[in-house]
Structures are given as structure tokens and as C-alpha cells.
Image: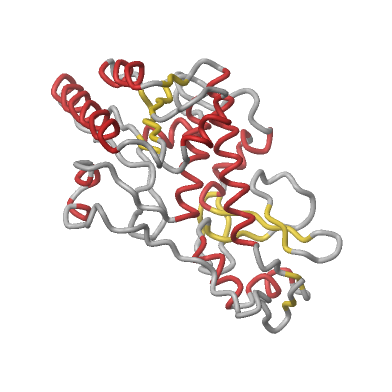
Length: 293
């Protein structure tokens, strides 16, 4: 059964279809990371776990954001995990980042006075968004992405799609039609195989048409699809990471039951429940052991 790219699990962390997670790790021959991916992103360290400085929970590196200190003591996000120096880790969502500030977690973890930028959460969000769009651009250059309603529909009908991409400001009518095609295709796949969930497909709707235009180098991109190809898994993983951080829950009409009973009673028209850091009135982010820029 397909899942939305932004499905939130019991722990508050977005869950991904097993096929998508396999794609991100390169566990399948037909889905993996592009050769252009940074070495740190492709290394075996991805499988190791790190401890969140807020929750103390051990999570995989893909579920966390690494932070280091700049030479002048400023907390700096390291989303590619390549910056030198000692790093600390925070669960990859805005709520945990805000909690890290409230608990003075950065100063305690680094064991020294640190500077926490007032716009740290927005900076992390912007970096994750840029990283996801760059991954989509790489997949497009590798020929692993198709654009346009008809091409996307054909790919869905043929079971070739790893992720359906819908512009957040696109027409709901066109989106609903493609989600319907996805449902029918998966039901047919389930019936043919006698199993459920083999064709797990993510739905990515984090980006506006303008953002997709710039990333893909094409005008008026509303509907697109990442195909089951070697360059696609990395792109889907980066989009999932952005969703986990922003905690966005947006759904196509008729697509709420894709992830079980927990979603059946949710209001599809409700606005996203986005939690943001509770900065003080001056945006200063002051706490014992921490100081604002």
C-alpha cells in the first residue's frame, strides 16, 4: 500500500515506505543514490545510530540533523555531515530544535557558551529544501523523472513510479485524478502479486510550481514523477527528510486512508500543524549558557 511522503509515525517522525527506505540506503539494485551524492551521504556511517541531545533517543543519522560550532562559537547546521569538528545531533524536526533551545541543550552538549542564531530553524529548513530540490534536479538530469500530466499518468499506470510529485499550488482536480490512478494501479499490483505494499509510492507536495520549474529547468511544472531508477532513491530520501523537519501534513482528496486507521478520521482540509521555535519577543534566543547574535 502506498504511503504519503509526509506520513507521521507514532514517535512523531515521518515514516517512509520500505521500498523508499531501501532506495535511500542503496539496498536494491534498481534504486540507489546517484553517483553525484556526497561521499558522506553514501558512506556506511548512514546505518549507524546517534543520540539526540534533546530526547536522548538513539536514531539513524537520516532522522537527525548534525550541528557543529563555527570558529566563533556559532551553532551551525551540517545537513550533509561533512563539516569538521565535534558535532551534536537533534531529531530532524522544528519542534525538537525549539526544545533544544529551551533546554539549553546546545550549550550543555558542547560544554561551553555558544551562540544560537535567532533564525536557526528557518536556516535549517531552507538548507533541507535546497538539498531536496538539488536532488530532484540530479534525478531529472539522470533521466529518472518525467513531467506533465499525461507522462505522469502513463508512468503510474505502468507501475514505474517511486514518488509522485505534485506542486503545492497546483490544481486539486489534476492532482486528485493522478492519485486515483495511483490507487488503481496499486490495487491491480496487489491483486496480481497476492501481497500488499510491494509497490509503495511516496507523494511529495512540499514545493511550489515555481520551485519545481527552477529545479527541473522546465516551465509550469505541476505534475511529475520519480521513476524506479538508480538516481531516484536519493531524491526521495531528501524530500522525506524535509517533510520530517517541517511536520507538514497535506493530502490529496481521497488519499487519507493510504496509511491505515489512524488517518481515517482526520480532516483533510485542516491547515498543516506546523510547530515553530518559541523565540522570545526580541528574537534573541537567550538562555543560561547561550547568547544571541
